[in-house]
Amino acid sequence: MMDTNAPQTLPEEPSFEETPVQPAETAARRPGGWKLWLRDLVFSAAASVLIITFLYQPVRVEGTSMLPRLVDQDRLFINKFVYHFEAIERGDVVVFRYPRNPQVSYIKRIIALPGDRLRIDRGQVFVNNKAISEPYVPEDFRDARSLDPMVVPQGEYFVLGDHRSIASDSRDFGPVKRDLIYGKATFIYWPTQDVGVVR
Image (cartoon, rainbow, N blue to C red; front, side, top):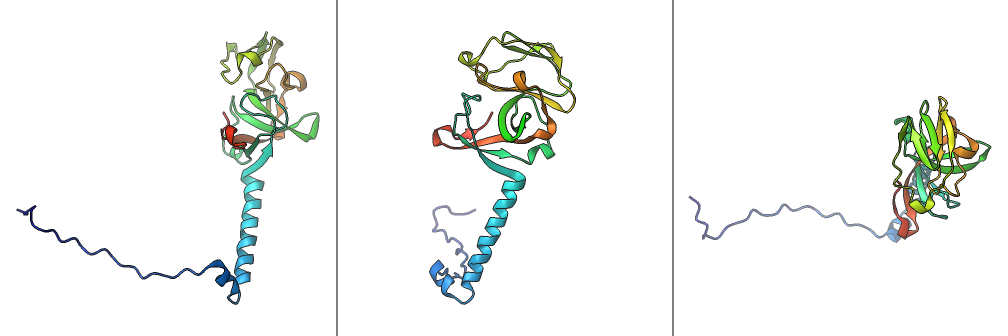
């Protein structure tokens, strides 16, 4: 039985040989130091291009059709890769090329998927004969517009702005073809008061 009152001897801590770290200026002065710096710079630039090209792209919101979550001049990241692996879902906030002018990009919310039956009755949206709950649309931003029943064509998506009373969306320019949708809004990074995930 161990005497808990006896002095205890702790095992020695393992020792490691320290490797001195040289300041950046010293490394830069070493022969070939600038080549290492240039290599790192090129690698970082290439990685950034790949990330922006294939994964995330920073964009700026222009306009107020997605209030209250997205404010004019908000900066956010869109995921350009996610829809290669996941299906577009109802409720996603997507970025797409405007059907009437592909040089312009719009950001809206997916409301109905291909094959869905859709109608809007004085602002209330019905999908497949069920009224959908839209907590992202504050009461003050609703409108009383109606839309005759329709079936969303295959390969197309019906999109609406969250600020219904001012948004130009699929009620005006029709459903959006799948090949025009190129990203999902994921995260607002600027300004600081708006930072957060886009839902």
